[in-house]
Amino acid sequence: MSRSVLVSGGCGFLGSHLVDRLLRRSDVEKLVVVDNLWTGVRDNIAHVADPRFSLQIADAESFASSQRFDEIIHLASPASPVWYMREPARTIKANIGGALNLLALLRPGGRFCFASTSEVYGDPLVSPQPESYRGSVDCTGPRSSYDESKRCTEALLFEQQRVSGLDVRVVRLFNAYGPRTRIDDGRAISNFVSQALTTGVLTVYGDGSQSRSWGYVDDIVDGLERFFWRDSISHRGPLNIGNNHEVSVLQTARFVSSLVPGSRIQHHPPIPQDPTNRCPDLTQARRVLPGWEARTSYQDGIQRTFEWFRRQIATASKQIAT
Ligand code: UDP
Image (cartoon, rainbow, N blue to C red; front, top):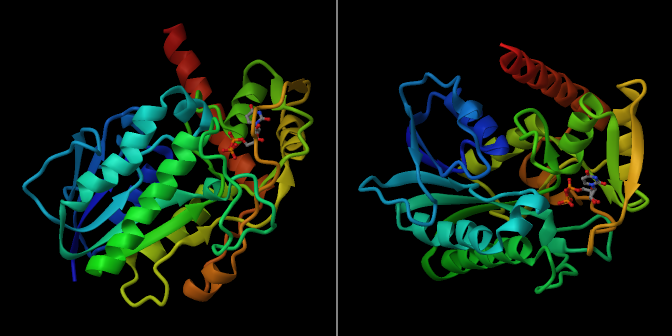
């Protein structure tokens, strides 16, 4: 059966890759992206010429439409600490307000998919983190606008499932990265790569011993498509989606630095409440999505991201020169 789909945040880094992926499907009848271009950029979807696609510039929390959708995928939210810490109220509105508003646009029996985050585990005391781990989160800390609005939206959706049988899908994403990240995004891999290509000085916060599990965008979007699209499913979430190879931030910076001879690492003061570790337990994902695995090594994924950033920076400097 063909589906009408709404993707909030479809001009963002992850959203635009998911839009590309969904438009490859013949069972998508129509795909509407709702994006306010806060962190998303038009360029990310500028190549899309598919007649089934349309873009609405609007906030997820106030977008109005007479149309009803078979599937709504709610991604609208900043994901970089730099961006969400700058505008906490707007972050909360995008996540919770967006979900509340978009739920009303779902046709009866439709499906609501949501991108939650590994940040719901806070600074985890168990590793790797299974979905059953309830987390170690400071609900008034500097990351709380993001963590808590993701948690509250999860609560909203699972409670709607309980009281009204809503078909939900909720993923918890672990440090996705790749092409189409903004150059001013502020997260580690995009910072390291753009710094290596421009100033040659990579900023590591603290001693760099904190660790992350970097998920290359193609692997992540593959997992999202499988999970969001499948009708018969034994588990509707929350589901960890990520790569479970954990590396330290310093090791990551060293690898990026090795791609540009002469670049160097500079240590800066640690970020308050920066999680010390992060690694997905993928037992559930392997059971629910047989055959899916995040296979791209961080070295390969970073190389590909590096090449994309290199081209972006070269194009931008050519435009400035002319
Ligand atoms: N980080 C860093 N330098 C940067 C950006 C980030 O050392 O220029 C560190 C940051 O302190 C954190 C890790 O890299 O320990 C991942 O940060 P990111 O913002 O990518 O994601 P999150 O903190 O949300 O996991």
